[in-house]
Image (cartoon, rainbow, N blue to C red; front, side, top):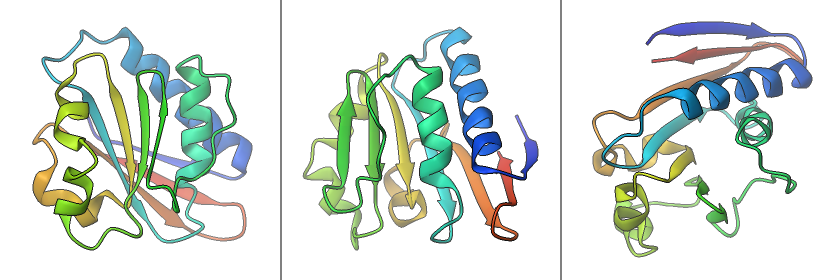
Length: 141
């Protein structure tokens, strides 16, 4: 799957996230958790996208970046932020392998390139490109 989207508002970025989540829920469950790696600069739209994504999964809680707590769990949706992670071992200490091995889990990881070595081969990668104040390019590979 390779797609590219151009959004011109935070609302559109959230909508793309919501649509992708609904597509994932329709797919056949994997043998392991479903892992999404998000990469892009600060302010690139990663957390905004995940707010829509969580909505598409049916999550009602407010989604905020887990930059300082590193991981938040919303039932079977894990939101991880590796911005403050310097070595993949740091995330492994939080039970990461167990989380991604559960086929019921959907795991979205901001700054995922920092732990790329330990991510599954079938990780879906989303790259966020900051174009201007409201415009974002989102590439899915």
